[in-house]
Amino acid sequence: MKLPPDLSPAADETPIRGLDGLAMVFSALCLVHCLALPVLVAALPLAASSLVTDERFHQWLLLGAVPTSLIALGWGWRRHRSSVVALLGLLGMVLMVFAAFGIQFGLLDAQGERLLTIAGAVLLAIAHLRNYQLRHHGHDHSRPHLH
Image: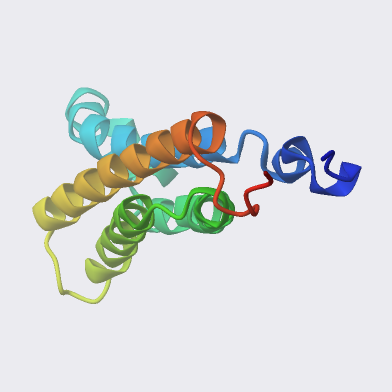
């Protein structure tokens, strides 16, 4: 039995093609920011007054990372139903959001913010990698089995 064109697997991929990759780029930017910032500030005093040292930098990155991640992981979950991917992604996003805002409200110091951002970015990247693998190579649970 042939599926109608609007139910073909490729139709589901068009709107989100590359979203896992884009979300990983946002997560990587947060990770690089956290890891490279101390070196940059020590090496280049001018960098200490730039936008990238501002705590709001993470908040701005989250404006791209969170919606992109929610769409990509949500669309992937709809197809593969992997609760591990969903939990890793949500935990990663929660850690990153808490890190970005926790320091602003005095709930974290700079070291805590850095550690939570790194942990969140790594978890989110793992979730997106697994999401990508399952969407492209895994079983599709969004469609009934046709015999």
